[in-house]
Image (cartoon, rainbow, N blue to C red; front, side, top):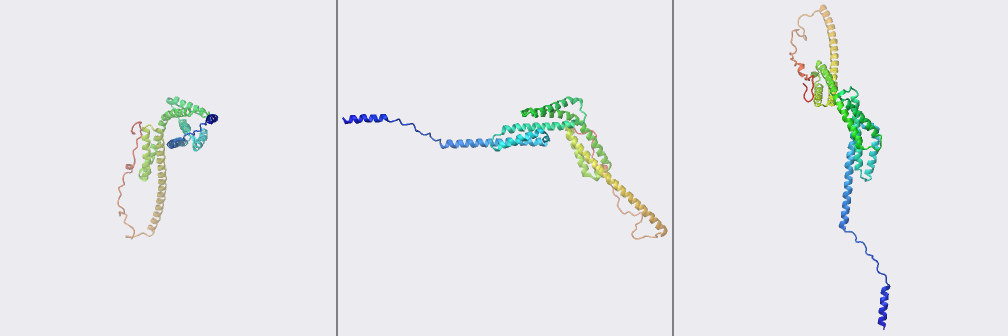
Length: 326
């Protein structure tokens, strides 16, 4: 009788217990998986850092080129400098600045092209613009106006700015190539005239080193001219002109001083001769006197001087494009 009683109690006791809750803990990741994730994160950070460095280097290069062109004289440069400082600060904080750097680099390049275009425009306007390139000049002016309008708008894209500036620069280069050709030719003629003046005073003999340097610079001008590098040719001709004129002026002054000294010496000799003549009349010398040579005596060997003209360099009066001077 007791056995069935205890059996019933045991069933009641089992039925009153709550079911055990699911307390299974998550399985920790394998050591290999953790290491792989760490490596991936390190690689990502390294690649991002390297990308920033390359982008900043490109931006810095564009900025330096803009400064070298004189672009730092314009107001737009100051606004770009604010962006530049902001990007540098973001990079220092570990942010990805590659796209920002690329955009700002384009703006620096656009400003460089604008500065170069303005410089050419100033040079062009110092001369009469040939009718042949008048339309190109007008196009360049129009592009410059458009660029300046875009520069005043804070939302203007770097691509639009760069397109307008490069277009203006290309137009003015076309105009300047035509203008510079005649300007360079005029500078060449002036340098040739200066050389002829220097040759008239035998500069090739008395100051050979500087004379030869001027000749080489002149020849470099001819080489640039023949390859249509008119601006470089002009600079070379101007430098050669300055050297030849300096030689002429220096030698002329020295020759004038020497002639003055000769005239003074002649006057002194004439005065001494007059005194000697008066002394000879009062107390003439007779016979040979020690220290005074016979008037027909040869004291120095004759010198056969080389022809100074042989030292002069020949430079043609004419120049052609695509070949040597004729």
